[in-house]
Image (cartoon, one colour):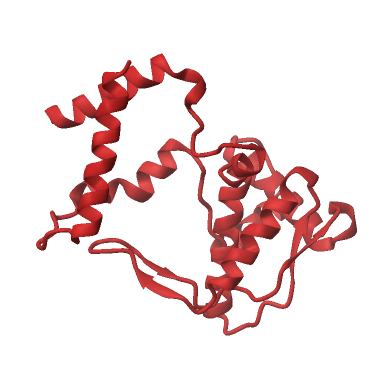
Length: 203
């Protein structure tokens, strides 16, 4: 616990002394878009499309995405990365989920204005109804029936600290590795730790 407290206090000390050096993993506008809630959600959409295609033994023929100038380029690049990973499956380590890109769609997304796609308009309606339901506002019996039908087949998730905790809190209970780390990885971790200590001490 003491080591964790030193790690956190050191990070806060450095951040207080270097507020303009904090990049949140994004050094420019394009990389900032890659970690925006919109793009994080888009990753989950692509993964769930792959899951549904596998469950239903269907081929994904087209992915229609709402035309949004600020996000479409980054969405296209992300989709291309996922498409090139198609067929790849890899363990992420003991106790971790498996990264499975076996059924990732092969088609690139098509970007269209919302009013030119019946599917996008349907998505807008479902999202509006789901939002009203989540806020406890009244909806008609017909809309409630529609929402229930989508809820049975669909899946929801959230980009929030609560969502992150729900998905990854199991990491706290993972057992310690039974074998030592590879030498090159151990050396790299030690270098990162030296760099961290040096940065904190310079504050």
